[in-house]
Image (cartoon, rainbow, N blue to C red; front, side, top):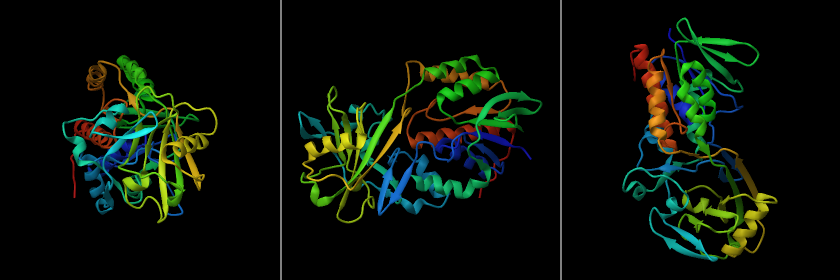
Length: 358
């Protein structure tokens, strides 16, 4: 039976693995970290749902929702409750028009009117989709195993691992960040892959803070606020997490999520001090939880799409291999799902594997 390796078990890699599984080609998934999911991290504690990465996805984009229905959790999709946002200017919160918050945060949105349908998430947080995929694919996923290199083999590729072990496969889906992808793909014999090293990943520092509702005196409107560009404050934005989606905090509590720039001192203390001033918070938070991604969202340089196309053109001359993920295609969870599944279909097509779906 044909075997396809998927390198990376973030949402892109798991979506690719699911596509292979549905086609009757069991994937071998290798993840260097101790857990699957990549930047999707959800913690559940005392009735709170705390997101360490993205908290939702655009409702207008179907890829992630289709995947959720296929793995049996379509009924766990939830719509955002609050709508609208504000901008922080000289200590005051003023209403923002639709799409302006995304523009201030540098978030790229594809398609006119995409934001009008709002965002969606999952009832118990974004990890719902990772857990559902892992329930179907766990036997195929190996964590804490780094692929050190890929080499051509007699029939496909040989993957080399720490300790000198190796696995031969017929095809490969490479669904890792751009800096790792550059090394792996370049060494297969695709020199232009070095251009992927130029994809910049901006750091992300967030603090989730739980407050008693009575301790927040300001009237919270919409999903949160963003700071005006050029602000000297450490606080870049704040999401009213427990107002944005249902079930994020128990009754009588609020869950806020602060997005910080570079800070000196404890991020939780910095975030609380800023929010206390802006939202008239009278008491310290019940608890705080900080997540720091040294490499968060990718930002692309000019001609990025052309460079990726050149890499894919050269990959097309090799045995079945495809690249996928936010490092090469658009950022955003639905885009990553679409990218992973498209890469798997490409490998299947080039292998001549018939797709058998229920």
